[in-house]
Length: 155
Image (cartoon, rainbow, N blue to C red):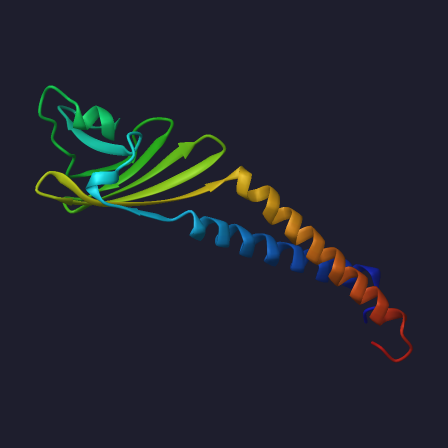
């Protein structure tokens, strides 16, 4: 069975896909950050209630606003080209387009304040090493499959 080039190709593509997805998941998991109120990044998106719905501002804009701003309690959908949100009175989920990828923010809201936030990112910068690792493993599997197919009684 391993002497068929098509079977070897399919096995290599399956290995390539599995290693690539595994590496991407590993990189995304390693980018996870849990943040406390004293170390929120200035660029963290926050969903603010407006007269007609909701808008996304950066944490620095909210913190330094001369007027009191109210966090949104109920919003869903894409508010602009960069932010899609799902907001309830106790939490906000924000998917944000960033340079070369996506960031997913989760914020726990208590008494109109962001009590805790977490984020993980997935970027194209992570995809290159993941693809490189997958290609190397796929090449090694292909080499091993060809070697097994050539051995008498190996397959």
